[in-house]
Image (cartoon, rainbow, N blue to C red; front, side, top):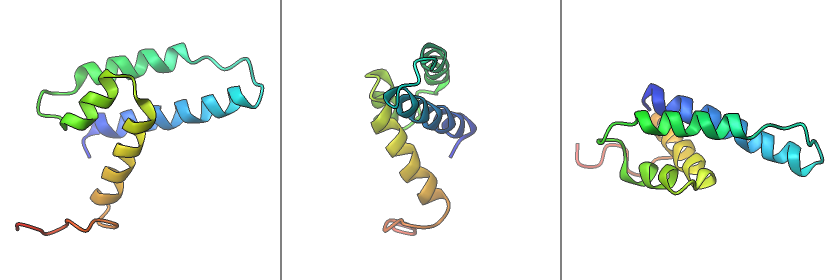
Length: 88
């Protein structure tokens, strides 16, 4: 994973926790700064970034983007990938 992808994943996980707190009644949660950070990070992704990830972020499908990045994190860690080594 690239450093931008790692940072995106961290912010998306932070957003997930913030939404959970909001659903639990914590109305002091500020989501706008998280959305601003996500927009800024998404804007720094190069055109060569994975198409699916760029699509999810562009459509504000943050849960899908988080899940995509978590799968990528697992793949990069060398676990859970059926495709590792294919075509090598």
